[in-house]
Length: 476
Length: 94
Image (cartoon, rainbow over all chains, first blue to last red; front, side, top):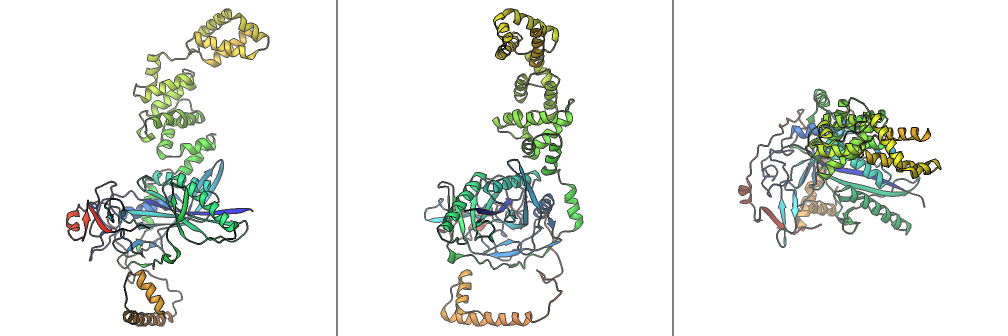
C-alpha cells in the first residue's frame, strides 16, 4: 500500500523580551518560584494588560524574515479554559487577526532543496508551571512563566516525512536565534514543537490528524512522528479509524499515547479580549524594523553557494549567524582568497576545536583576522595542513598569532628546492631497494620514498614539492 | 435556542454547578439574549468590516522594561495554601 504522510508543525518560540507580554514582571529563567509575578500575571481583580512593544517588534522581525504579511491591524482574543497554571481562566492569544500571515522557510533535506509555507505566526502569553512532585499529594503552581511572550508559528500541512519536519524545525530554530527573537534553548522550553500528523493513501483527501505534544528535542520530534505514522498506518490497515485527538510523546517508551479523552475535547470559546484594543502596526514601524535586520541565512547560503562550495558546507556555515559572520570576516581578511578551502577549515577544524571547549563562534578565542592569516599560510605553502592544525590548536589555547607560533615551533614548511633536492638525493642513496622496486613498477615504493624524505625533513617538507623532485630524479 | 443539555455543557466548561431550577432559569435568560442576537443578525451588514472593539482607537504599547518587583510575600498572604514558594492546589495530572 502506498501511503502518504502529511505533517504540519506548530512551534512556540519564547521571545527574548526582558519583561512579560502584558506586565512589567521579569521573564528571566530560573528564578525562585513566584518571585517574578505581578498582580496582572496573577489575574488580580481590577488589573489590566498593557502590551509590550518589544514583543510586537519581534513578531514583525519574524514576519519580515519569512517574507510574510504584517497585519496593519491585529487583535487579541481570549482562549478560555480552566487549569491551575492559568490564573485568569483564559489565555490571551490571537485567532482571527494574527500579526503575521503567510511566508515560509527554505529547508534542505539531504541534498534536496525544499520550502515549507507558513499559515501564520501569532503572539500569545505562556501559562505557569505545575510541579507534581514538590509537595506530597498536591500540585504546586509556579507562575514565573505566566505571561511570558510566545510567538506561535504554524505551518501549512506541507511536510511529507519526519526528516522534512526535522529539517524545518532546525531551520526555524536557527532563524529565530539568527534574528535574535528567541534564545532557542530547548531544555528550558524556549522552543517547543507540536506536530499534527495524518496519513492517507496517495491521491486521497487528507486523513484525520492527531496532534502530538511535548516535543522538546529534534530527536523526539523525529521519533514521535515515525511512531505515530506507523500507528496510524497499522490502525487503518487493520480496518480501524484514526480518532482526532491530542497525544503525548513518551520519550522513555518512544511512543505516543492519548492525552485527553474525546469527551473532554476542548471548546475554547474564543472571543475578542475587551481589555485590549486592536494593535496598529504602521508601515514606518515595519520599515524601521526592516532596516535593523541582519542579512538572513538563506541569502548568505546563496552567496556561499556562489563561491562554489558544496550545499553541505554552505548549509553548515549558515547554521548560526555567529559562524556565518566568522566565515565572512575571515574571508574578507584573507590575502589569498580561497572560499571553498576556508569553508572546510571553518566547518572542520575550527568548529571541532570550539566544540571541544563548548564554545560557539561568538566566543571564539581565535579572531577571524588571525584565522585568515593562518589560512593564507596554508595557501602560500608556508604550512602543511597537518602543521596548520597544530598552529590552530596553539592559537585556540591563546599562544598568540599564527606567524609567531610558526616561528617558535619551527613549523615552516620547506619548499626551498635546494634543501629538498639535497634531502631527496640522500633518500635515494640510502634506499636502493625502494628505488629498484619503484623502477620495477611498484607505486608503493614511491610513497615509501616520499615518507623517507618527509622523515629526513622532520615532516616539514612540502609534500607536493617532494613528490615533484622525486619523480624528476627517478625519471632521469 | 439552546437545549437544557447545551446549558449543562456550557456550565461545565465554565466550571459552574447549576441546580435544576437554576439551569432552567439560565436557559431562559441565555435564550432571551440569543433572541436579541438573532434580531441584530437580521440587519444587512454587507460591506461592513467586522471589528474587534467598539471604539475606533488602537492599543498604546509599553516599552519593554522590567518595572515590577518581587511581591511574593504579599500575594502569598492572600492564598489559601502555599509551601516552598509554590501555590498549592489539589493534585492535577493530565
